[in-house]
Amino acid sequence: MADGQGYAVDLDAFQQVLREHVDPAVDHFRVGADAVRPIRDISTAGLIGPDPEHLYGDFAPQADALQNRIVAAHDGLRDSLQQLSEALWEAYRVYAKTEQAHASRLTSVYER
Amino acid sequence: MVNTDPEFFAGLAEEFFEGDGIHLLTDVANWADLCTAPRGTPVQHPDSGINNQVYREETAMGPSAFDNRPATLPMANLAIENFFTAARLLSGPVLADFGAEGAPHRLLQGAFVNLGTNLTNRPGGETDPDGGMMGLHDALERLFDHWRGDAAEACKDYAGAIYTFMAHELAVIAALVDAITAYSSIVLAGRKRLIGLMRAFVGAMRAKEAEDVANAQQFPWGLVFAAGAMLVTMGFGLAAVATAVVAEGTEIAVAAGLNEVLPPLASMVATTADKLLDGGDKTIPATDYAVAAQAYLDAANQVVDDTRAAVEPLTKQITDALDRFMDPPAPPLTKVKFEADNHSLEPGTT
Image (cartoon, rainbow over all chains, first blue to last red):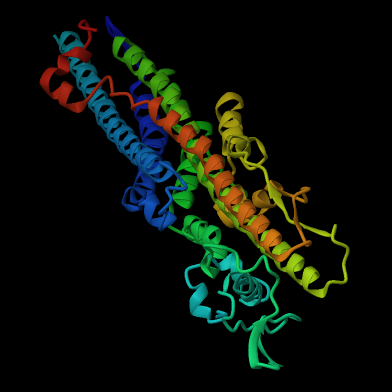
């Protein structure tokens, strides 16, 4: 594991975990977020039908509100995870570039 | 008039037609007709021994019309439709639509399974050993085995926040799925209760008509206890599953398919609605037509009131979930941040 002044990373393992575990888990969540999103377009009041006596109170509007919050939260987490994934890959590239530069400097010193 | 036209019953929920089609409804309508038709109006009542026909009696003054209904009839300010008011009020929701493919209950169940497996990992099955998946939280934990530093620490905090959020989201979805299931169960139980009530009403009227029963004979009908808030503890609740997933790491097996993980709404609702019904000790007396009819109408109104009262705590449960709703955490690192200042991860700066 390369060890800089403020961080330590095993680049190969880092990349492998990103590719084999983190990204599939992010993708799995994204698929779930996509699947639940259509609920936003379904009106509970429409399913309940006519309710002239307001028998069911605010059940329908509150259920719709919660459904919309769930979809928004799923989409929010999906975006958040997507950004994290991109950031982690960027981090990998930064670390790799740094390590490469570090190795290059060492090689230059050695060759002198 | 008597109304046996199927159009008269249009709009009533399908449960009211189960079994013998419109026979029960027709019976209720006929007996309601007997109770409400203005005196002297011809009333058809095919099963009635006192069929409310207008008879003509030859008297010394010539032919005279009379009907043979009791003096307590007709009941004031009532029409046949009043005997179906409660049934119509409970007929709005098409319960099958709640559990259909693409309907909220199904979509939420899918989201529940997706979140649950992402929290607990997804094992590969025998037929698909490579189909397993490490959950997000564990995947990030694995990353931290190979990465240390300030940026890693920030991501650790984020991973913890994700776990907390996903566990919260799982509980919220479970609460909503349970509320929809409970709502559907309450409506179905209310309909079943009304059907029992209709049968008791018809039975009482027939018994009175036959006049071969003791006045004390009464016809029981099913009760529903208004227990919306208790429904989630009756055994179908996803809330308990959510707790097991989060607190104990219990895996949700998805290999067998959603239907086997979480039963379709219809079967859960039918089972739960039956649990909400009991034999009860409420009765419709067979002592008098008007008394029996009024008892039926009062009990039908009570079904409506009980349904309203049972749904209220479900609405509160949803409102509470909205009030406590947690927004997803923002990522500690973004590509945009790196592009603006990627030196933040370079050696010597963290």
